[in-house]
Length: 175
Image 1 (spheres, rainbow, N blue to C red):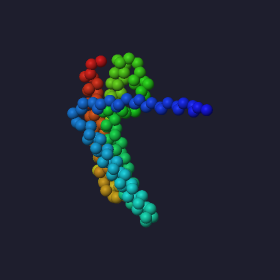
Image 2: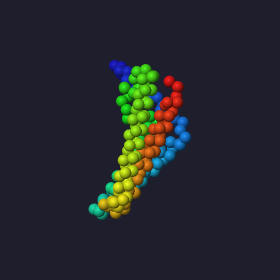
Image 3: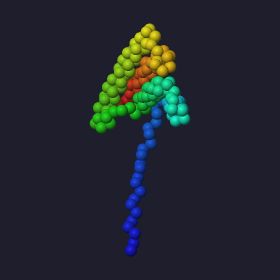
Image 4: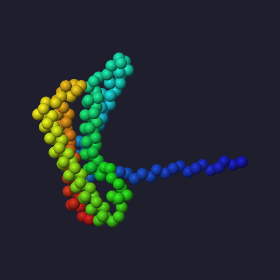
C-alpha cells in the first residue's frame, strides 16, 4: 500500500513592508523612545511582581508610573504609525476605487487627524495649566500631576507635526 501524498506546504508570500517615507526628523527617534519606554515599563512591572511575590507588599508608585508610561508609548507609537501610514483605517474604503478617490480620502483623513491632535494639544495644555495652578499632586507619590500630564500636549503636537508633514508630502505628490 502506498502512502498518500503529503499536503503541500503553505505559502506565506508576505510582501516586504514599504520603505519609510523621507522625513526631515528621523523616525528612529520615535522608535528608540518606544523601545526605551517599553523596557522601563517591563522592568517596573517585573520589579513590582517580584516584590509582591516575596513580601506580600507592592510598590505603590509602580501603577502610577506604569499608566504614565503606557500613555507615552501609545502616543509615541501613534506618531510613528501616522508617518508610516500604518494607522487604523478601513482599508476596503481607503484603498478601494480610483487613485484620485484614494488621494482625496487620504487628504481628508490626514486633515481630520491633524485637527484632532491640534485640539487635543490645546485642551490637554489647559488641563496641565489647571493642574499646575491648583497644585494637584499624585495620590501614590505626591508629585505634581502636571509632571505626567505635560507629555500629552507635547506628544500631541509631535503627532500633529508628523501629520502635517505627511499631509504636505501627500499634497506635493503628483496624482
